Length: 308
Image (cartoon, rainbow, N blue to C red; front, side, top):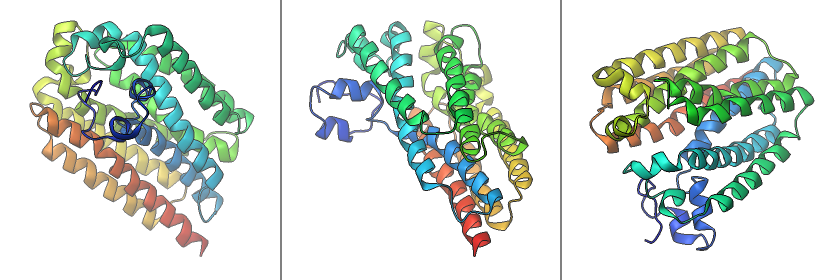
């Protein structure tokens, strides 16, 4: 199909149903690959559920959950568009990414910048629905987002910066309920950073050879043949920090069962990881959507049980 991006799932809704004029812009936003929106959303929802648990509520604030859902996809789209603008020359030199809208010529630079502004404004409107503390906290994340595309040019740890950006919601959900932070969301944030670093290392294993040719650095290249051990250590740290966060928020059985299921899912990823199998790396990366769901389900069930 004309304009289809190489690493997008075959038969995705953008390629099948979106109006032709909008397809290149939706591809810029990765709407044909929505996994990033879910991964950005889960820390927000976990944090909102953790706050609800400590407040004794039966569930997280549904209005907050809806805002985080919309905001996650809007800002993920804006972030991807920004990343593609900055990386357009690199993307043109990498086999997996040269079919993206900018390097393939589907979208011009000016149009991409305009689309970035539209998405950023949508995210800002969502952010303004929260209390002032949360608004300023959300705006602070833009510094990390802006830095991310440049880090891989000089550091082997761009996954750490991505971890900061994609984990920011672990602070936002709590702040939206309390108007401040404490150790529980801060430890959840730290655990999320390690989780993101782990799954993005798996994702980066797809591009190790091309990245070496164009000079892009990553933890996948840094760990090399020891990528499985590196991911395992990151995941162990993530679960440990999240367990401390749950304990500080007075979580009990069902929350920890959810964390246990999350841990099993991460262990399954480590066991199946093959750094030379790009297709498997992509599938394992995408499976973190389900990992996020089981942890949220445990937190939600804990809220309900405690309420009744």
